[in-house]
Length: 632
Ligand code: ADP
Ligand code: MG
Image (tube, rainbow, N blue to C red):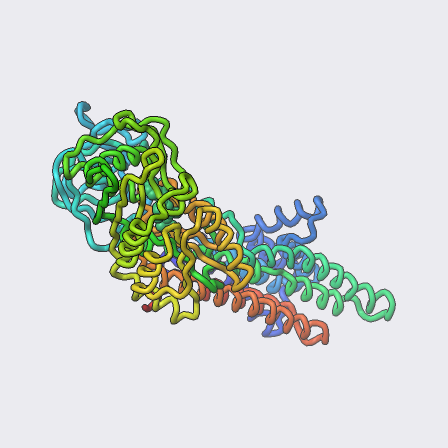
């Protein structure tokens, strides 16, 4: 509030308001100011604070844009002056301008978190090989930046030398600093602790994670929510209608019933002022901005009012399994060779095949091969089939064609792997919650590989909170049913759909939307992009540093932490409640005053105070979202 009162413009407005109130006192004491005093004084004040309204109003008049609120005000203020109601003319303009100023203030206040993010970013960087600091815009990818203790890291980079502790709360909202060693990734805009670091620049200034967050948040402001579109449509029809009604309020009594003009003209003006959908128009944007600002502060990027409102209406949260409900650090636990093959043959080929795959299974196999320092076989004609597996031609083995993937995939490719012995081994491993893949060489089965993953520690608690909010939970996975069931049971998920190909996940989401309503999909945002896009809200986990994940999702959680979800749903619900309440309050008060005007019990002043009063109320109500702290 202090910043508001200190602003120059606001002080002017306050002075104008005091002047208007003085005028009002004069008029109540039944002293009529002579025209040559009242008119110039009022005109001066109106011109000082409300010029902009009139310019816009007159422009709209010439363009015949009758839904413009400025035109309404211009007509109303001019009418009041014509009636020699100087104090009313001044108050209309001053109060409306204060309302507008408050709206700006609300938006600014909620965008402040964002501005702070940008301002924290250093303007220059110290680069190896250059004696002085250079502007960050001139730093190129691949250059080596030096970061001193206590400095803010200028750009995204990868640590080459040194170690330190970095406070990443500016991006992730996570208050606990992270230790960084060679190989770790740094984000521009985060704060280096007590160590000296040298890091290779990974991204130029316009492409850093921070720049991406800021850019997307600004774009988000332009994406309109369902409530906003409703309000716009409503105003477009409503305002011209009231203008027509105002004309009728003068025309019928004066023209047909021969009643006095002055009184009915005042009634018509009253009607016009009430019609201004001012409170209604700003009820939603300030709420959306406040909620978005709140989220940004906590390391959550919400891309607009649409995602926010959908979050408030959620009926189902669908989760991907690997890396979402589980940690995704897969570990190879069993390798069972078949026929003449040895464990090493299986691993050498599997690792070779997976060299070009991004799947977590691929990473685990490559790591295993590295640990055992096994020479990995070279492959060509590599092909990846999402949700199924990989295939390729081995340049080392005598039979070249190799396929690696799910049991189903191997069966459909080669029509094999139906021996009792094989099936039993697969079933036994899956019963332990492991993911099992099989590998074939030509038409022979070469081996079985099982990988193990840990369920996220926070998952059971988070899923319980979500269920307690009467939101259902579901797991969508490409993995086989037995191992998926193991995970589902250990985290307490209600519905399970296993063995799905990527497009089937999308279909499943669409079916669920038809059945229960709005659905959120939570995934890593990289290999779940279609499912994230199909859901009402696509949420990506651990998105800091991954442009793909940040871009694919409607909501990106910078931190790799499921624990943010329940609070996020609460923020969405609270926002929706505040938005609905604001819209309702604005419309109801409007109709109440309108009713008073129709029965002749209202005057301009009451109308203005009602409108501005609701506007201020609605803004303050929306600003509460900025400070909202969801309890778990
Ligand atoms: P999830 O739903 O757990 O993300 P995916 O749709 O990524 O699962 O994959 C489903 C199944 O397809 C895996 O469990 C695995 O059997 C097989 N698969 C997919 N990609 C690969 C790969 N690169 N290597 C081996 N198996 C794979
Ligand atoms: Mg996946």
